[in-house]
Length: 208
Image (tube, rainbow, N blue to C red; front, side, top):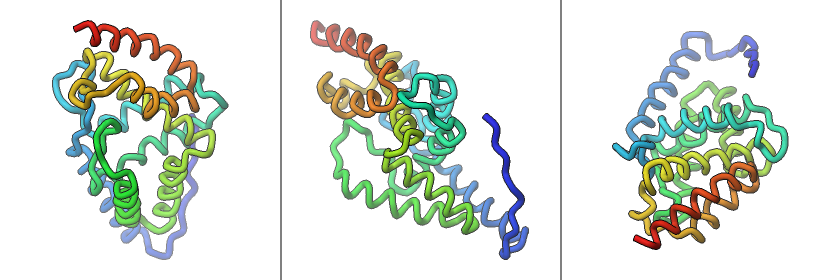
């Protein structure tokens, strides 16, 4: 992955630009305190959203070859870097929890406006465009990024013996509808591999 960044001529001036960038970066630190509905693989504690973002970027870098169509890995990784930053304001909404999807989407859009708005205008526009692209999930890059975002929590739950699935009363059908559909759309080979482990876990759970 190779990225080049052109020098920016900004009427803000260098000092104001750097001040705005630091304001955004300092705000992003708060993502480390947002706890998710998924535990670490060892089940010892809930992961935070910053850890999740790092992990799915690594997932994408390792597993991009399984994308249903070729993707620009640098763009995928940047989407995944930014996708959950809105949780600083809106919080994490577990995919298997009960919530108002429309209200959550509105809260996240407001958060995107505020948080990306801390940046200099050119960066604010570029970052917000990537976030919107991820949310819309219409381009090949976003479809794969969405798939990988769904894969990592499944693997964490499998590795931790079911993780928080029992807590949220997750069923195999629910998992397929809320997760499998998105993973198959972007990386069907990965879902095919996971499906056998998922089925085995639910079979064991039914016998307990």
